[in-house]
Length: 112
Image 1 (spheres, one colour):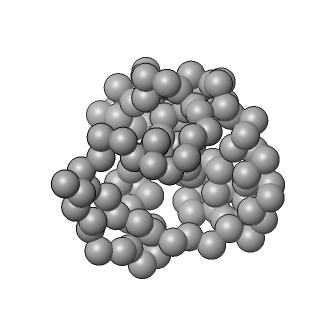
Image 2 (tube, one colour):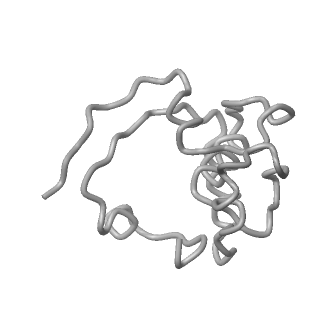
Image 3 (cartoon, rainbow, N blue to C red):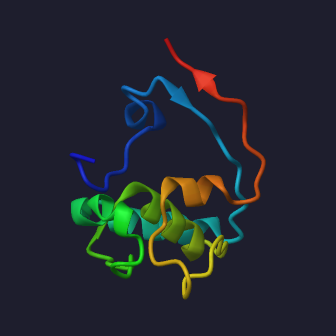
């Protein structure tokens, strides 16, 4: 989060992680999703959005000038044609919201 939005290899993004779990989600239009993701590079981290998690309905999440992790992932999936959640109802997209989507999860992988 200190770096904002950036494009890096997976091993760089995962530095410092000790556990993770994957979830394979289909993306009908991967080229559009990837192109949109590249356009987000350099945008800042949405600290106020992340700190607002306890007040989930306090503000619409759709500020495209900066992102926090789960909202960026959600919007990139939307840009690729997979709308996991109803944007008219979902005011914040938390990591738990993404985890709750009905896609198979991998076993938890523990590193170190």
